[in-house]
Length: 514
Image (tube, rainbow, N blue to C red; front, side, top):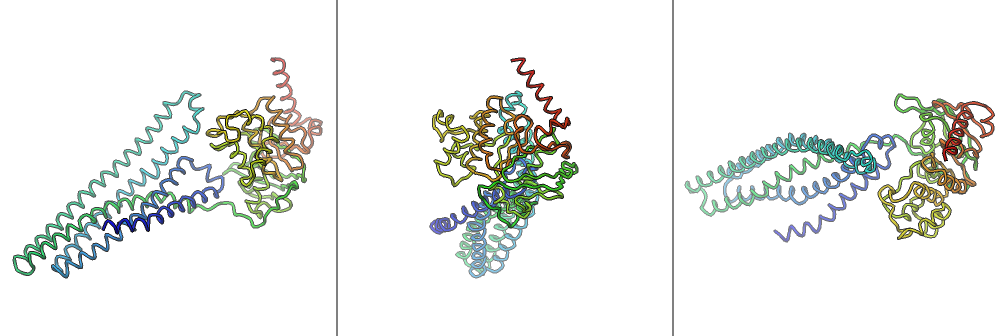
């Protein structure tokens, strides 16, 4: 028996692990393929928890079916057959009735326990996990506001709710175990009573009685284990409900079929009558503009005017409600998302770095690049000299979210990524707004070099950083109120001119204070 179990494990264990791995990979691939709105609705910690539980649940189900459920059913059928043939059909019938009652009780109580488990695991557990991840990701903010105790208290409150729901589930499990033990004891007593009576009547021999006793004892262990496995199986299915809910979610953005050519030529960008809303809040009202290959466009305006929304539409994180946005004459909705994003590089306001090395973070721009290409990109971004001062050079770790690097260094990593990617369209979203003036000037020089020969779109708060652009759009409440070159807009004496005058006066005050 032990040898059979080991053989079965060696045969089926690799399949179980492979199944769990495949489910995890498919879930991550599916989640990364969903649109931005899905990720804005979910907590990262909760998603991570669902992914972890899904893998463990699939492996638990596989082990339960292959290693326990099927062998136990076969063993039950074999025992009943032997009892009917060697002892008595009546005794075999009692065993079947006992097994049926055992299974019915298990199903009934486990169903109630599963509802409690669903509340505990899929809702409260995900909330607690998400809270912990939020606190850890925002460690600096937590410490700066001296709110460590607050975060711990909130986490403890969520865990207390989880504990209460889990205890309710455990009470049902205790009732289940007691009922199973009672049914099993009554069944064994009836079987042995019947067998003893038949021995006294001379219907069966003492040897048959011993055989019946041995078979019943042989069956009692697997029967108890079957109840345990069913509970685990049911709980695993509850855990998988969150997985199925995510897998049922379909991307809102339908992928196109046309591949955008990847070359060194800047994109021809054109927007016509773009309309967009977040829920019921209208953000863009008929925005239209055109950027010829190799030209630069800047978008400025007050907060909430729709600047970042236009960038999200350019990256096709959303589709416009109406209107048309095209690259090289092709509607973005008809272009494959892979080829579109291969042609675009983004230098964001806050660069997101992975907890890996400098080299790996630069390589994210083009994972197939060679080491010398990474170094060359770092040189172009004026990052190379800084890396040479680090203890492990390009293998130096940047820390969680790049916390080991300064703001300027992180921006240079983002620029190095963009150099390595060699995009047809460069998008800069307030790339220097969080930097001091000295660092900003150095970063701007790198960006100008990167922008050479490429179509560029800049979103900026500091107008001095975009005064060189070929065209500037001034947005207000989702409407283009002015457009033109820097000098033309100043001559119009409108919103842009007022913004420029305000920023110039602020700069003068800072110089006087110095």
